[in-house]
Length: 159
Image 1: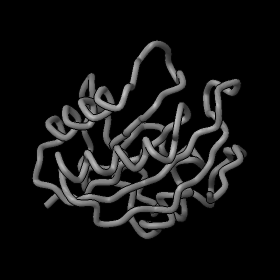
Image 2: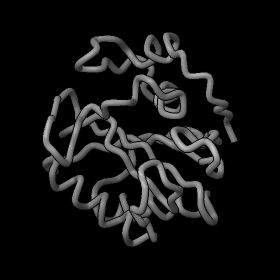
Image 3: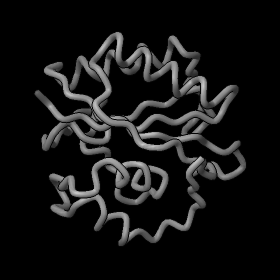
Image 4: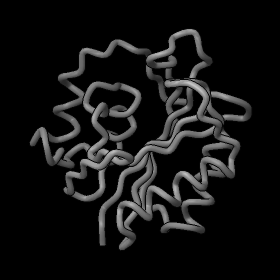
């Protein structure tokens, strides 16, 4: 079984409902959620004039190959109204693969571990809540260490 961590985010419409619906679809189409973080409200990152996000990290165990996991995640995003118009644009739902066990994947459509996760408070706050001791397979530091070394001053607060 592969230990998977996904980041969910929404900043359009009923944000809490989109997070819940994403989790429901993930459990129906991919695997049961083993653990989930609290929901955090976060200022928009990258495009600072966008509405605030709700973010949550979930943990799954699955035998699905990473490429199939990505296909299923993208299908769930489309099902929940995700439109890809601009980089860092607002969205009903965004689902990122943060970790796929301790694998390192470099493909044009899939980078795992997520290449920006160690720079983003909105990712590390919820991730540290459920996986503080998890070791980043490239940086060789645990999540709590990465969170404590952050220079990102974005406001991230538990809802």
